[in-house]
Every structure is written in C-alpha cells, then in structure tokens.
Image 1 (cartoon, rainbow, N blue to C red):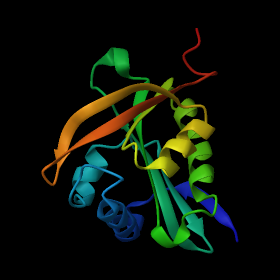
Image 2: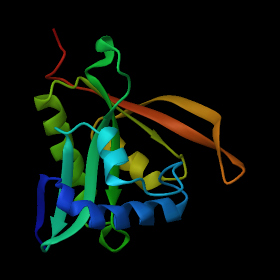
Image 3: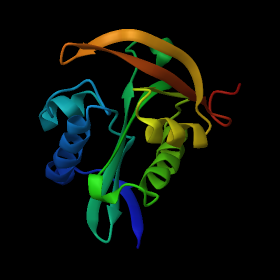
Image 4: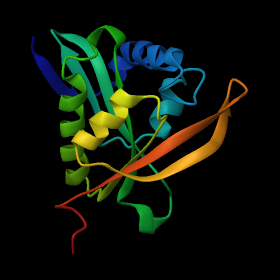
Length: 165
C-alpha cells in the first residue's frame, strides 16, 4: 500500500466530488447538503494549501484550507477540511494528509489552523488531537441540519514555527 500526497488539481474534481458526497451522506462531516461546483469550491479554498492523497494511483482523500476571514489581521488563520474515501478509511491516509497540510500551511505563513467538527465524528476529532489540535470550545446548537440542531467542537492548532515572533 503506497500513499502519495500531491497538490490537488482541477482534474481531480470528479473524484473529490465523490469523496465529498460520501462525507455529506454520513451526516457527520459537514453542514453542507450538496457538493458545490468547482468554481464555488475553488473560490472558498486557498490555492496554496490543497492536497490530494492517492492510494495505489487512485484518489483516496483530500485536504484543503479556507481563510477564516478576509481581514488582514487573520491572514494566518485557516480552517481545515479533510475528507477520506469511505473504502479507504483506517489506512493512515488522514494522518498523511494532515501532516502534509500542516507543512504546507506553515510554508504559506499560516500560524493557526482551526476545525469545527461534529462531536459524533470521533475519528476526525482524534485525528486532529493526534496532530496537536486542542479543544478551545463547544458550540451548542450552532446550526440546524435537516431540521435538527447540531453541536460542534472547535479545535485549533498553533504553529510552533510560523507566527512565533
């Protein structure tokens, strides 16, 4: 089993859509209910921090960062999105993607990564904690999904190498 991490390309979009669709279907990965167009997705994600994971030459996961604000003071803060194909989970792909995303984020001058995760998504919470994310809050009844109020856990990771001055 060979996991290869590389920059995500527009040509990867069909496979990314399928993985995103699988995440949406779980009801535990996102508040989104439909996969956006490439144009909408691309406009909301930093072009320098988009990664694809390939397992035996097949796209098996992806990760990307979104700016949390357009305000200049938050230029070094980004939100993590990380998705693994249903049939590829539990094989270390999330860890490889997260490590590569952290490296890419620090090279891009990001000093804080944050994630808002449904508490029921224990695998995602554990993955983030493994890479030094700490819980900074619990957002009770933050939004409704399919008519049901949902909670999220807010996690963040502060870089030890970027923004330390």
